[in-house]
Amino acid sequence: AQSVTQLDSQVPVFEEAPVELRCNYSSSVSVYLFWYVQYPNQGLQLLLKYLSGSTLVKGINGFEAEFNKSQTSFHLRKPSVHISDTAEYFCAVSEAHSGSARQLTFGSGTQLTVLP
Amino acid sequence: DTEVTQTPKHLVMGMTNKKSLKCEQHMGHRAMYWYKQKAKKPPELMFVYSYEKLSINESVPSRFSPECPNSSLLNLHLHALQPEDSALYLCASSQEGRWSSYNEQFFGPGTRLTVL
Image (cartoon, rainbow over all chains, first blue to last red; front, top):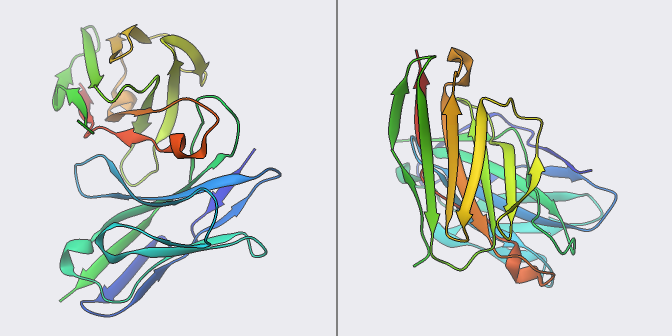
């Protein structure tokens, strides 16, 4: 079984400032890692994913994340945020190589609020 | 077409009503999922269908009845719901298979359900 911890439930940041949203996971097997964003009253949209290969993953809207296996972390970063980045962000993991419909285990979410 | 569509967008129902939520995808995905999401919480997995067969039921009450009539459609039949069942119901789909690129779940916009 896997678990995901998002260390910050709320992150306020000023527009054009950098931001980091933290995610740590626990698993006894290899995992795939994801960041999803949810805007108010909408579904979840995939920002980026780590499946294998380079540990630095670039996603949509200028976001990137780095997989750190030794620290079991997958922190999300953006060098300069916009008002439109205000949303809920979920980190998620699934078991790698399971060969069947994979369950996602979500973290509790981080509300990013970008202030003018 | 990379969309998952859900209807209706909003649904208000009484505790004695019978209603259905509908989800559709045309990406050729063979895994489909129902999630329940309460406000300010991550999505909770309810059901998973793999190749039109129910593969995971996360101990969901029988007042929720899923159905997968074909590989593109997923329904959730609702009967005798309780006010605490009010939530955003999200549908998702993904490829099936051992290859890592098949791991991403695509989410629909959700149905906002209110039980009176």
